Length: 303
Image (cartoon, rainbow, N blue to C red; front, side, top):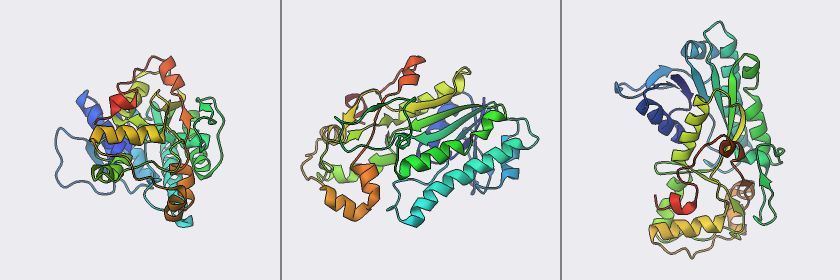
């Protein structure tokens, strides 16, 4: 299988690229900067500026699948009005370029894996009162939900062009080398980790290995389409997570981070990302026979 990965140089993209190559597939990574030195055992890099649909169409020509992971990291910076616009536009521009490229006269891929996030469902500050969200649950409110709805819609036209489209609503991804652990590990290793806010907010997550395995599962199963929650089946609170991380690192978890301080530092990003969360079930993956390698925090931590 020849797979084009938009966002192939990111945290998830790098792991997915290596997994594809390891099983004998071809991985093509469009990028603004093609490395001067590449490995025959690595991906194929193609020059793309992130917006030009004409050059993207040539990259897509003859590919079997395309995976669209492109988008500004939602936790990279405080959510100023400009940063919110960057988060949204980075996703919509990539989706629009992809759809236009697919409308040009090329041999089209058969499959599109479209990234999304569990922020689609909204956010709740208390795990006990949060509903369990499945793929059939309605969209919620807030900036993340609004952005995610538009992100998913940005490539909806691909279905009318004959592509099988799977939407992956991904939880925060745990793994070494990136994601939220890249920011948390140095703090916890110094013994400075602690409960975040009340600690009672729901915390959905998925381990990097399972994220990649689920994407491969969707690529391989031609009968599957529509939204899929990429989230571990165990339901946790943020306190479950920080305590498990402290035990895994053999470090104390004792310095609480109060909600007012988080709001002062992060603004309204704190209310949606840190002081609230979602209780989400991977219902459709389980129904179709997907097996999680790390279904619980105890299996995901230690790393």
